[in-house]
Image (tube, rainbow over the protein chains, first blue to last red):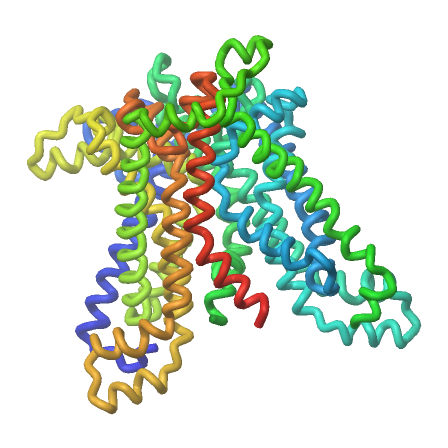
Length: 280
Length: 299
């Protein structure tokens, strides 16, 4: 926008930029650096700024203590199941919405947009009652059902954008060359949709991996906790004296996959939510 | 391609069926159930098998006449507006400054924002709890070093200070989305129009108000709406801080209030009524967003 920014303005902006950087990364730095410190160095008189001669003891403790790995298994099961089901269902729906005009199409889109905004807090009471009635409290299946419903609106919406982006002419050309419609779809359109499927899959992964509210409602049994619920309970176990090193190590472990995946889809997250507005 | 629709009219319906069925099961049915629940007396006795009793709008009457709910509602709205306002103000400021930074600093700042944005909410919560910890928190250490009397200061004991900490955390987590989205919008503002305004003698403020602002208005609107909707439903942050600090009655927002009432307290009828209240509030606030998105859909 501003090609010729005056030097004074740019200097000022740079200073603010560095402050923003500091404020953003300090908590993250603190988490990672504390995770390498033994208990006595965390609880010293003055905080250790850089964890020279750190230790991996916190990680060892977290990974061998049963709680983390159990929660990891639950989290992985729920997350992967959510991603697979959400991608499959969203893909079918996205193709329908993008490639066909049918009765109820508009209502379907409208419903997606409204549902996307409904907060979990406004429905978890009755979702809890429903899963309770079906015997699905504390079950991977039960949590997956409500998670898929939570991510479907966004995944359908995003995937539809990708399907829209594949020109029909490509499919038609393949059919002229002798492919059946099904063949044309699988050989021409589907490969072009791969980036979209990856992006939506990653989005679903991040959502399900991070989700806390529904997990704390549905997984009431400590043996069935997902990682976020386990972490909060672990932090809260004041009776044993808070072990900040171990807490920071577990937080770091939970964060790593998200940061990696997040970098892959960041652009999509911005444009997906405001696509309507940008075009006006 | 009308051919397709004519030849196999059932195909698109079959394609949307799995998604629709799942949404109906996981959201539609609970929604109906919640309406019914909110009209029933459904407490501990019903948990143990007694048939729920119809009370009509009794639960709603109880809620509306209960001053506790109003305190929670007002607190939720105040928290929402303060947080959405701060997030938006800071986010817009950062976005405007990003357009004026030197390349290196801008990339550095963007990396930082991206990292803060990517942090899982519970991980961010544990770190911030640690930073504000009574005994080992670096905030107390810094403030003590700066000359304050903050040794062993408990940040979560007093509701005001509790919400101060909650606000810092929520804003820290929300600013990146706003900053990135608005920065993206700012880079779309046609440069020649801004330059033409400058040549016509418009100062920086005038250019901002009369050229830049109208150009990014739709994005601004969506960002503000999303922020309000998201800040209305803050749950995880309040829940974890309550666990850490031990106070809950004076620090409940709508989400934790419903949770305490229903899941913890077993009064599902009243909790369902409170949840309906939250649902209606959100849907009303969402309407302009949905209208914007649909408008694009029709273009």
